[in-house]
Image (cartoon, rainbow, N blue to C red; front, side):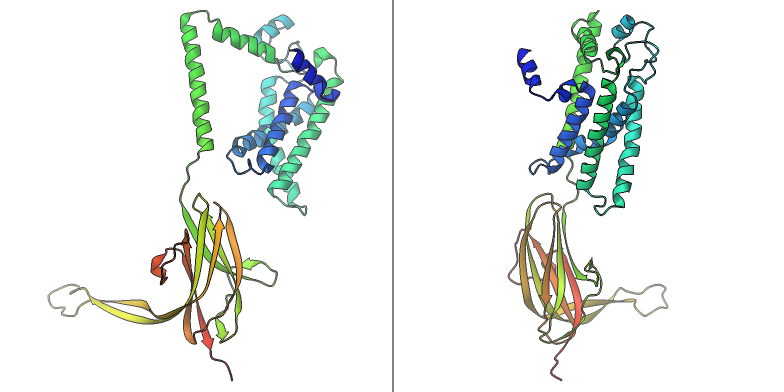
Length: 371
């Protein structure tokens, strides 16, 4: 106890006097900022439960604490201080002008749901926009300012009128209920209740720490840059003169739930369309002698050449945009440019569309030029 008191004396006086519930709100705020911005922690699932607890409760709680610094009368409180303390309620004196603990908790959730979107709406009209860093900075600043106002207003009240959370009364009542039951049945029910709570917390914690991975896939696509410098899936170059090039932005997305090595092979192909007719037999009655024929057009590669090859390594949910010059060497109409994506970097000796499920293509016409 002496060591704890000596450590507490190292803190500034305003922090030593800060009420326990407001200290808890600042502690949650600090933990959320560490989980969001710390290099090693921001990629872990820890930020999810902390972020939910912070966004759904903390801003509203400190705002209510600033509005109502005085203690309130609980609906179940008796009309005497001794009886109220025995029941372990928030208000320990009758006829308070404030609000009780249940009302504070309910209003904290409701106001948090209103305050957080309102701050996001205000950020939308600023140069910073609605992004993670501005939102966290704004909510943290709001929480700190509201906590300071709440603490100052409580300090201005007499000690017996200030709102406080009776942690010691709760602890004493819980200890007596768990370790000093009136009957064996009460003791068995208490043990069952504790085991159920531990099991529920363990299941929820496991679900948060080890969420289902979902679908695993990669993606490849091509983009161009418009007049405003934005990347768009439009305006692709389709007319080339031999020896000239055009700029293409290659995009790769990793949703494999693990860090993956990628290889992209760029091919140019000369193709021809082969018409296959397959007979499926008479379509109907005895007098019909013609057969029903199905026409299938198949694109066959007659010649191909590798234009370029790129490699990159991406973490899960990471994207890669690579700008490169596309310069076809084959001459003719309907030259097919194909980008083939190979996860794990395993590329066959003669790559083709049949070797990978991830590919994108572009049809171009190439002129010989020279007048």
